[in-house]
Length: 388
Image 1 (cartoon, rainbow, N blue to C red):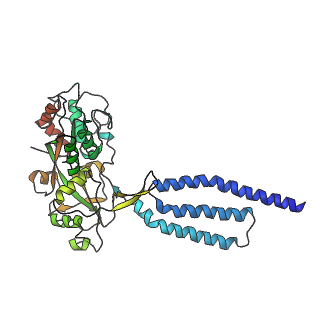
Image 2: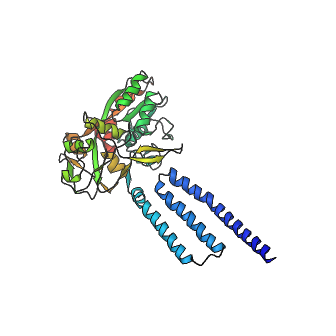
Image 3: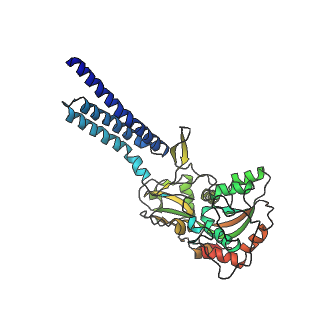
């Protein structure tokens, strides 16, 4: 009888153990999926070790195996600590401040919104378009300026940033929308060779009308002692010929030269800047795809003390306002509106209104107005440099 009770009790203990561990298993699996698709694979060993440690402690408690409990617990603590140490480099990497093109909250620049930050004209616009509005799109960094154009010229209503007459889908998608006839005008820097080829393949000719100027800038961690680089030094860094900051009067640290994805506005600007000088392969990070495989993706700029990245002046100083990075002078010249206007700053880009043969009847008049004193007033007030 006692033996049967003992067997029954042990069976109950086993059942209880299985139920508790089974209850915890889906939670662990959800955690595994989260860290996998969240780009945190370095946390997988820690998750698995924690699950197994809970199982060991639970088994010792349920089955009253306390003889070596202290030793086992110390071993488990050591294994957990070791898995945490293994994950520390990844944790450090993920906690570094990131600078990304196109990932800022642009809702505050939406035209006609109650708290809109877009600039306004001193006098009513000389152009008003009431119907058949040209569909416009463009780079994130230029949304504040073309949203202001729309607020001055278009009728007052809500304009969804992703599906309306005034969109903001970033450079690559904006060019795709223009080439495929989903937009009449886009506002961006010059297209990449791939974007030109895509337009040509579809029988479209891209017409670029300069509407303003902007500085293409390079930035580093605020604690980096390097204040200025020459054009040749920057090209040497992005060609992979200069690999240590010591070579440009910095500290003895390897240079982490971050890049942006193909067809983004800033990557195209880098390609134009480099000219015939080959660009080295960009740093990449492993990312889990929806198919469960690992793919390489161009890394976002991580603000390490030895990092360098690039963007546009207005986007950096006005839209992201990241005080942990510092813009570099180039050839000893700081990127300011004054040095852009005078031509002293050596790396400037024209900003374009780009069309591809739209049949909208208001496109030409709208662009002419943008080039007028009123349109250029908006360019200047927003923070860019007018074309005139």
